[in-house]
Image 1 (cartoon, rainbow, N blue to C red):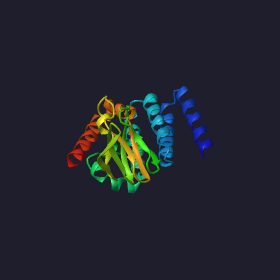
Image 2 (image 1 turned 60 degrees about the vertical axis):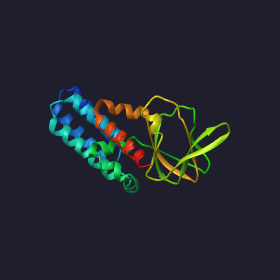
Image 3 (image 1 turned 180 degrees about the vertical axis):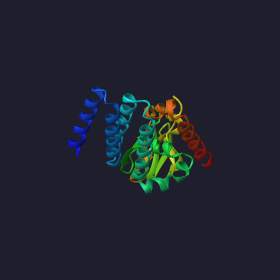
Image 4 (image 1 turned 90 degrees about the vertical axis):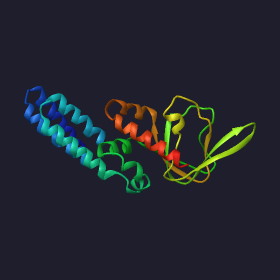
Length: 211
């Protein structure tokens, strides 16, 4: 299949070089749909950018291909994840939900492992999916428990939304499965998805007030 799609991409380039814009647009649209349905979203989005470059006036194909990519992304989202974070996702539209979900990376920790350390920089926002961790403050060799972080709770927001150092450490109590968002990906939203960045920060603020 990949070989066939690669040949079709070559055909697109040939059509474009020959000025056969209509044929290039049609073939590109079909390629975008195929890659989206195969869950290769980065490739689908790259080809959609190419579609725009070849013919910025092919609005029907540009809009429709964008809708298809978003639909396929929504169908690929893990249902358990959506249940855990239902309160957050219900504040987001489809495009924002997809952007957040596919920006998240995932990690697992064993018991008594440090996720972030007091006094260090932290550029990640942590979403706890499974297990528990403790937020602790250390001074003069004494450790004070600030709170327990359980599934559906977020950690690292104090340093994620501001440029500062961690005032506490996050240490696992049990095996923990989590998702995390990197500051670099969050910053990208300031260009086209400002509302997502704002809603995520608002959600973190609401969670903190409940503690």
